[in-house]
Length: 325
Ligand code: BTN
Image 1 (cartoon, helix red, strand yellow):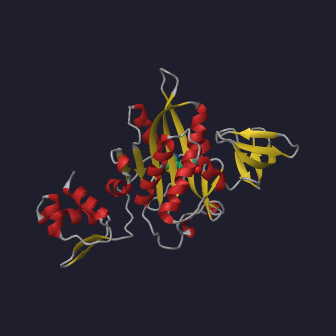
Image 2 (cartoon, rainbow, N blue to C red; image 1 turned 180 degrees about the horizontal axis):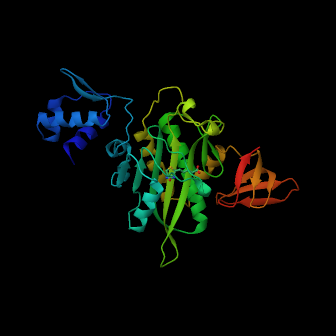
Image 3 (spheres, rainbow, N blue to C red; image 1 turned 45 degrees about the vertical axis):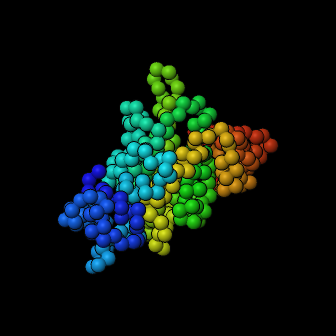
């Protein structure tokens, strides 16, 4: 690790507290001049580092630059070994994770970007991925799963992100089936799950979990045509958490649930925080739209709806989309 990386790691782990140049130099077994040079390099990259005589250096509490060191600071011990790539700009983190899966990348590999130029959404839509205020992350999960479990992983991911947001920011999101998260009636997170199939066995051997979150976006910066639907976790107020913390906590939560997917306890959280259960929904099929009542989330993650004529159907990801009426 370079001196710069080590200095950042130490400051990140002690965010808000001062570390003298001398202590840093001793801790990292380098010269004070090397520490000073590293601090200057970090400042050039945009890190706000307070330098006070006789006290030393301190990484500002609300300095919110995504970094590998920053994410690692908040990862559980069991996730410390995962490979992390943070890009300033990339086409799509899902694309990167899929390429990594094909090249034999390992379980838990994480791709994050500050900006995506071709962010992908579900159903072939694009996902607006502006610089500086969002989280665009993709997690590679190595799992031999059948098609049914892919739906369950998507459902599990919604619960994991919901729990992580609650823990890190204190904000309670609602889950719109199957995997959008809403905060104060506006969409703040979308999840795109993509499966990678092993051509020889024909089995799904990796899942790419792509998560896009509007972290801090002021209302006037949301494009007008999206402003009725799209929101952010923080709009006006200062964030009381950093994106590094939230990214790491999402990884922690996903790993816990996905390790034991057959234990479907997480579905309780899913049902409790569902924003569609008991509501009238509009089921948009390939041929026509029908209104129905959402009555249950099944154990496989499917949504059971009851149509006006009393007929019931269990909907699965990909077949339909839902609009609250
Ligand atoms: C949706 O709401 O339609 C799903 C959006 C998923 C967006 C995320 S951002 C990180 C990852 N990379 C992508 O290209 N897409 C996903």
